[in-house]
Image 1 (cartoon, rainbow, N blue to C red):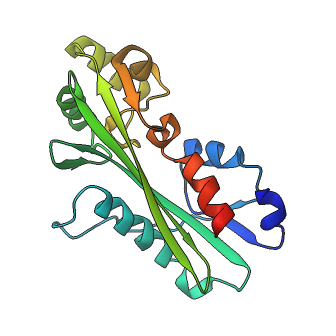
Image 2 (image 1 turned 135 degrees about the vertical axis):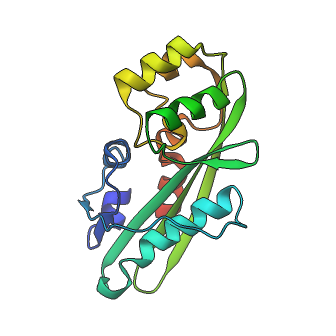
Image 3 (image 1 turned 90 degrees about the vertical axis):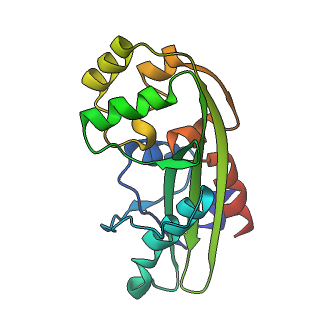
Length: 193
């Protein structure tokens, strides 16, 4: 299992997201949290998983000068891809409401990329989940934004919160990917790494 494979490795999860930390914990690996601030700016010609791949690698490269031989850094990035546009984290309440109005009564892709990096090796992979939203009323959207303040979430929602319970009609793909970590793929990639 993973704990055996990485017993002599300093595994570092570079994420401040409580959801990612919780999901990662379930893999049974001993790990530390290391977060570095990174300007999440990407070239405007990138689309869909190209964006998340680029940002996951960018976050990992912030650790280039301090990786020791037995360090593994794990970074990730998630976007909501809707109508050929990336919906990232909302800037404010109005932005969150506008995003949810766009997602209402349609489907979108949630794309997460993960970068595994040591001093000598780097692997990047991504996962896509399609999420179908029911038609949401303005009252429902306002209630959610007011009470759950989803300003740290791509697309302005957390599937594991109230809006996911009442608004998501179905998903195709991994539920955990929508929460921010494709744990099934991460497990497989770590086994191969």
